[in-house]
Image (cartoon, rainbow, N blue to C red; front, side, top):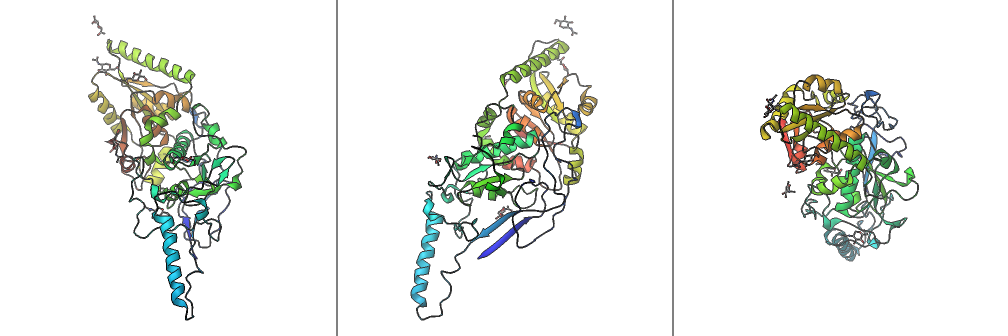
Amino acid sequence: MTMSCLVHALSLFESAQAPRTQCSVRLAKPKVLIPPSPSAAFPSSAATGSFFPFEFPEKKRRGAQEMAGLLSKVSRSGSCCRAQKTAAWFPVAVICFVCSYSILDAFTWHPVAVAEAEWRPGRDGQSTVLQKGKGHSESSDKPLVPVRGPFVPQSRRVRFPDHRWRGYPLPALTAQPFGRLGNVMGEYASLWALARIYNVTAFLHPSMKAKLHFFDALSLPEIPGAFVRSEWQDVRKTGSFFAYNYTNIERAAAGLLGPKRFCLKPYPFEIHLFNPFKEELRREFVFPKRVQEKVREILADVQQKWQSANNSTVLPVLVGFHVRRADYVRYAAINFRASLPEDKYFTRALSHYRQKFPNEVAFVVASDDMAFVRQRLGHYPDVFFSSGESAADDMALLSSCNHSIVTMGSYGFWTGFLAGGEVVYPDLHLSRSYRFSRAMYQRANLTNFIPVSAD
Ligand SMILES: *[C@@H]1O[C@H](CO)[C@@H](O)[C@H](O)[C@H]1NC(C)=O
Ligand SMILES: *[C@@H]1O[C@H](CO)[C@@H](O)[C@H](O)[C@H]1NC(C)=O
Ligand SMILES: *[C@@H]1O[C@H](CO)[C@@H](O)[C@H](O)[C@H]1NC(C)=O
Ligand SMILES: *[C@@H]1O[C@H](CO)[C@@H](O)[C@H](O)[C@H]1NC(C)=O
Ligand SMILES: *[C@@H]1O[C@H](CO)[C@@H](O)[C@H](O)[C@H]1NC(C)=O
Ligand SMILES: *[C@@H]1O[C@H](CO)[C@@H](O)[C@H](O)[C@H]1NC(C)=O
């Protein structure tokens, strides 16, 4: 039996209640690259004035403790083919060969779901007897939906018709919310997309529902009954915190980790799965009528002001402009050795749209540092500022514009993704891979995302 234990070399957050997975080998001591602010990516409203009133309760930090999350155990049949020191070795070998072949054949090559009886837990109770077929690359057969990933093709998926939990088929996925609005939306969208791609049960965790309460059209069902942390097994992205390797999460969704309940961690944000579901995800993140009406009024007011300033009857195109600042200045410096895009990028991004829509464009700016954006952008007559009552209101405002300009961070990503037009983003030189970077957007086939140099 081979046991391999993958320790996250760099991971920052851990749910306080998460059961510690035992690890027989310590591979690396993690480095903490982000200073222990409650949620490095998203400031609390206390830190940013009252601009973001949605303060999400933060997990207790574990400082520099490792996230010994992923215990990948691959069970191999140790007893069957052991060399027999007997004259009868030949028939035994033949039987073993036939057995192994049929096991491999049954689990690896048949393009149909494997029946429940054929799945057996490994000795540790967690692993599966499914083995990767030699020479059968996981990406070699085409997914049903045109996403980059999913990592587990249709032919290797496993379903368990007889395993149900409170009426729902297993496996089942959920995710406790990490971070603030933009991240939590990403976590929800990841669950939603996995449910669609893998036809797997996915539940809305009650705290996630609380954090996304203003979206009243979320379609994922809530966990039926109480959420008991210990009944859900963690499944994590692997490699470093910045590697964004979701293979294991997708393996769980594909049934390769058994008919269990899984809790996705940390910050599952599978941006590469979103694009084929753009319209559907936009319908998930629909704001209540009341908010939509208010937004319509604000935008009509912007257009009117622009018209009177221009002495024009043209209705200007609306470009939402989100500027992430606050704690992200430090976050970007420490983790990506980058400074946030400023004036040069702002000028280029604005002129991109001014050239595209000559004398017909108005910009609507929101930020977690309104003083900064007013100072930097206040002198442009075609720039208007959000009055910024809440993160959700600003999301509603920016995502109702026709096109977008974003800087860094998940919040900006969602404003652009939901607005649905062009999204100008800064093409930054970063010291490591970043979720909202050119490489990732291209991989995600987000062809409406336009890189603009920030140098
Ligand atoms: C990428 O997206 C474009 C539309 O934006 C679509 O036509 C194309 O098929 C997609 N390609 C892949 C490989 O998903
Ligand atoms: C999805 O799963 C459900 C329940 O397991 C099953 O009834 C249904 O046929 C599946 N749909 C597809 C398209 O495979
Ligand atoms: C992603 O993680 C899986 C599981 O740990 C590993 O097998 C695979 O090689 C990783 N992929 C990359 C590109 O690192
Ligand atoms: C606005 O347009 C009207 C009619 O075209 C013109 O008489 C007036 O001078 C213009 N005002 C300004 C400030 O350009
Ligand atoms: C329209 O107004 C914007 C500022 O509101 C200005 O930049 C632009 O030059 C004006 N265009 C015309 C034709 O007056
Ligand atoms: C631009 O956005 C506004 C506000 O949401 C909307 O009323 C208008 O129809 C949009 N224009 C286009 C061309 O989509």
